[in-house]
Image (tube, rainbow, N blue to C red):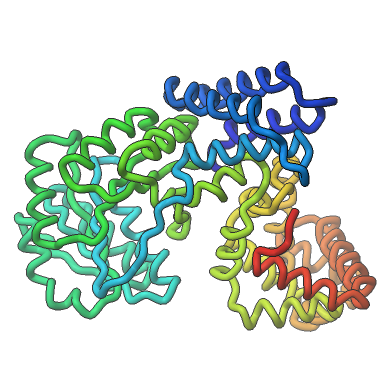
Length: 447
């Protein structure tokens, strides 16, 4: 999960509210101090922290509790709403309303700009857009090869000129070709610092491109320094938004995130890992929900949609509900889950689950899933279709073929039988289950 320590700390703070006998000034003061400690340890600016907690305290002391909720629930609601407002409120979504829609990425060396170009291309390609990437980085020789390889892996078209010295000429040479795309993502050169040379170069490219979005790529590990960098780029290059990378691996992520949120360049995407699909549109409401253990159903459903087609999901769902699934179906479900990310990340998106299930247990289960996958790879077609035929000798052969213990093979079969038994017990409630799934997809189910 992003900003693990901050999330755990804030969850503990909310837990203190739920366990309290009643809400009084003492509890509110303790709550404010806990939130201050949590945010300061995540490298959030001191002034911003005190502004936020003052807003929480003022509301908690002065607002009347609505009739339909308890004082505790109202206090949690205040914390949630103030944190969402602190991180940008409704967020700043990019609306693709022109063709070709041009997105230019800018930033300093080491920010992950070229990698993010590839991630952004994959993000939009998965949503049905025809995407092209072009490198105008004539400074870093490896930039051309890196983006070309990324484009090939992702399956989008690539443009660039390895011998060119002028970035503007590179774009002009391919301008006609780029008109046939829905979205064009331009990777620009960086420097060690934002100097006059870089500013002049970016301004020239921007005038040639007329980018609809100019996004500054910032690495989360720069912490509070992100604010100054965002403001400087914004003033010189007309930055319309920020992408924060490496947000999953640094305690300074809180500083980078909040620093940008209070500038005129809002955070539009966040990078959560090295993989090509580890990029998310930044939605403050869902992000804060994850931090507080409240989940993020919208992002969860997006990940499900990306991992498995609607037709396959319906087919698998029907089989599971009717108790007719076999190990092939189970394997396909595991593959789909793998595409969605780690179990820990998935649980963080489910309301209440991220706060209740210990990370160690999820990590242990993840190891088991990997081993079960190897075991299935060593089974015959008959065994996958009818696991009931797997006896001791077959289990020994599967264990030897997959390199795991016989006990782990038996545990897989045991778990399969348990799941099938549970689904058969629920078979009479298919309509209720289907109704619940529809409510979840419509965002109507409340937790």
